Image (cartoon, rainbow, N blue to C red):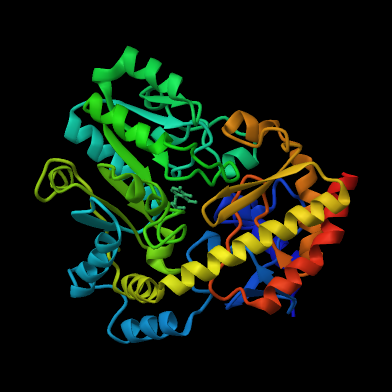
Length: 433
Ligand code: PMP
């Protein structure tokens, strides 16, 4: 048996930072990341045989729990017929319809393999459709590692305190206007100055990459209103929230209730059920600007891959109202337990909530977190000792204060009990920091 430390050293000797995605390196919390060998239900197991209750859940895809039998079976069935065809399959339209039937305004769908590809395509499509160049994004919103969107992005950039990425030409981000989140005045000013040049506004449906930050009441509806007024497109990024915050993502809690749809959605994570699948969906007239019908080029060797498609279909078919009710209830339960543990330990905090998604912020009880500046101003140093105490107790949290916590249909009473019993010591560690 090897140890996590041995595996990490071995990984660092061949891969930058020992990882294939930065936050996995535990940069902001320090220490040795567990190297995982198994994921079932609400649990993951590392190379040392230690089992953890998982609150990362592959960063969102495992809505039903890891290795859900129906998903595994669907994948096995698909694998038996071949791994990749590079030609169309009936299942791709089936998955596209499962997505479209749950969302509003999704008249056409294009499958890709990652959330990054989805947002990259959405931006290109918005520019190609409108003939305009500028894009508005919000500070602390993360849309994958698309050049144009790596300005004041959250997620790993927030964790590593990077303003943007080296290697992105200034000319590229010069076409991106970064505005403070939840701030209508900034939008009004940007549209007043640049309106006819703005191709699109892109926003996370509820930001979950600077910690969780709920859009203030009516904020997303306002995005719809101001973009429509100026002939700009609205791109709502549901890569993380899609088919998780509700059967129709966070849009299901906002647009569906308020009666509006964006021009384009981006999806990922849950629609691949743990395999690489993502999508752009939206208005037919806009979507048909994509090749082969239109002039906006986009393609992918593995797009709509049959194994990923099978996992996505099985996941969405099993994502019932009971699954969402379960996750909603577990989320509320854990939020209450967190509040109790932090209060008992005297830790100033806020639980940041958007639907069933939440994260913890420290030193923010007065006003909460409403934008990236608030998120960065928190007492973030309290997270590392909290995180490591939880890890020691067998609970695997996101290794950054700027990430959402993920629950699943597999988080049962036993898993919840294990999390709850770990909280007092972890809250005390946060208090002592
Ligand atoms: N958009 C959002 C809102 C995300 O949270 C992420 C990934 N966490 C992405 C886009 C990028 O997805 P991927 O990592 O699959 O490229």
